[in-house]
Amino acid sequence: EEFRNRMKKAKSRMHQINLEFANLNISSPDAVIRLETIDLTKRWIDYAVALDCPRVMVNQGDLAPAVRQTAIDTLKTINAYAKTKNVFVTMENRNAPWEVVVGIITASGIRANPDCGNFPDNESRAAGLAAMYRLTAGSSHVKHIPEKFDTAAAIKVSKDVGYKGIYSIEAS
Image (cartoon, rainbow, N blue to C red; front, side):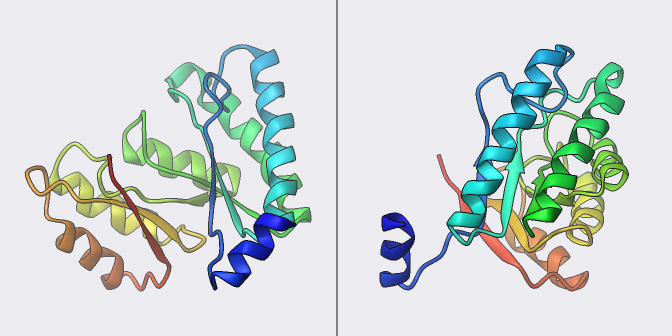
């Protein structure tokens, strides 16, 4: 409550909570780890509600072919709970080709959190961002890596498909 009040006083708000819990992820081959991931994610969905935060982003793990259906099933469980709380579950493009990530997002009913820095080249970035921006709940990660790609071109892709959400700048 104190944190929420401080955000209001600062005329700010939280837009997404990133849930990267070390080795806890949706695609773990270990059923116990997946159950722990589900339980902890549900707890953080409740925190998101308390903080008036509309989104949580899950840790997808490695998304190896052998665990993709498991990841989808785990996401469906998490998403069913999140929907009862009016919270969006998101996942960014990482640890698998963007086409695989989009397939998992679509099959599980969650939303995308496009990350323009997580593509191997400009051609896949343009195609992947166009697909992912259509699946968002209004949040995107942006990395400025001028030696790797044109950030303005990545943002143009989002505008071309009608994205009107938040660009969260990642820096290291």
